[in-house]
Image (spheres, rainbow, N blue to C red):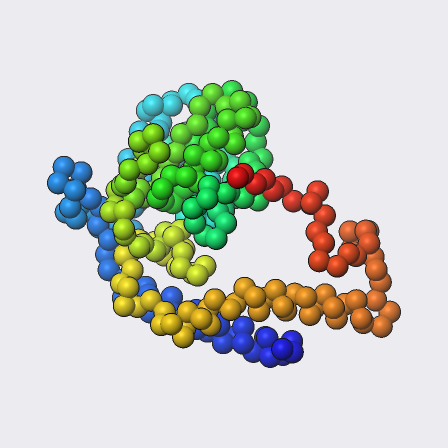
Length: 275
């Protein structure tokens, strides 16, 4: 496939993604938190106003329980960003002192079935003898957080806790529950908005909705969406080939080193893998 053909197909896929995500959002239903006593859907809907109010309650509790702790807040990118930003704004209004940084973690295959985790970005603050709070948009199985906690404990923090906007209530390893939770929802809920994305879209929505399965991609649409990653990889290789075959092209990179086909210097990345 030529470069122009790939680019044309990628434009088609991007347009399809925009159409599907708009369809998903418009047909999504308000998601409601669980009534803790009856375990049904009689709680509050996760509207923008409800999220703001619940974030204030979380901030007030954090300040009360850790008044002079000057904790480190670590936002898990990219999903936690909207909630972390809202929480920071709220804490700032109260004049609360804290340090803030980010890290990035992802599971292989978009699910933690084998317990494998990739850390592509580490916190930029020393954690020794610090009170640490991990901020995330949602806690599902809890495996991602527990792996991150296991890693960060090697840096000597005083304690590590999890703050999440949404928890999918379910049995977990050692009966683990997040220490700070904004809303509890059913374990089978498929939710989007406020950091929770669908094909990289809808993170910036200011409320959380439950996805209607009828609005999801058809088989043909899904096949086209699934081809995006391989098309981008093919495009990358074609661009690299163009650069090496271009008359007068140099073997030196902008970083001063020699070009090497399909090779990335591992020293340029912070990546850790756990099996």
